[in-house]
Length: 158
Image 1 (cartoon, rainbow, N blue to C red):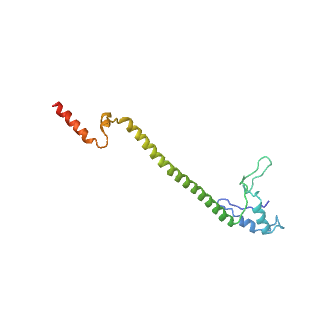
Image 2: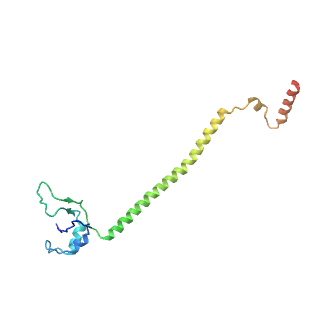
Image 3: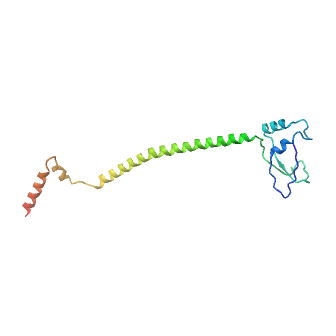
């Protein structure tokens, strides 16, 4: 356990692990070198920050102050690695969405067009009824015969 007291009354304090680790060896840990301290801080997930008031007394049932979550101290190179991994994950997710939307549109639009055409064809077939008499007389080359018959029926009526 390394204890470092910093008076931050009325000011802002930014935690910088380099300041603490560069101060090794300390009076509390005279046999620990700076490199050993860095190794221990990077390998142990038991690092915590405790914030408390200077004159508060701690008893066993009620710890004084506030504690951070456990953490490790890593060099700046790790940040670049984590950022790269985050970007790779984002790109994979983006490509999955692109593929999904492409397949959805590529299969959905033709299906929608075919369904719309089928429903329109069925609706037109049921509502439009063609005269059956006309279809009996319509044969290839028989159009002049229909005109002649219609003309005769008009003359007979007159």
